[in-house]
Length: 148
Image: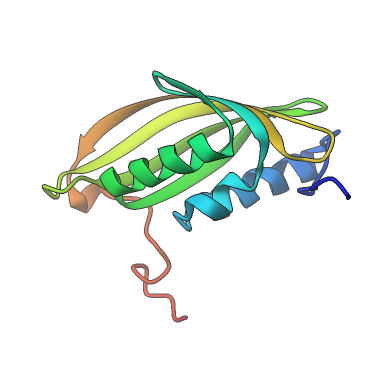
């Protein structure tokens, strides 16, 4: 049986680190916990704000819960730094709660990858700032007027 791979693989170059960040942004913007979880090792270790958990099942549970709360979630990630098998990003994402209040979440993530390009560690910190809907910066393609 061959081991799962998720290119690009480490060691990262500027180009491949940017590709990895874009792939993560694209996957997270689908809001599909199954798809997102496949980018992580089966025993991936996470810290997300004040939550600590391990493994794909826990990742799926977390993301399912997250996107039930953070409605119309839209994310932007930007490469901040990288080394052989680590990448740091800054991010912003916007979402609203069930009352219609919009938020912009700002933060950073530090990622560590195994040799097959799967993320084995994710460390995330963020802050949420209430915004007016008119202050939004990030829109889904269908909101921005793109045709399918």
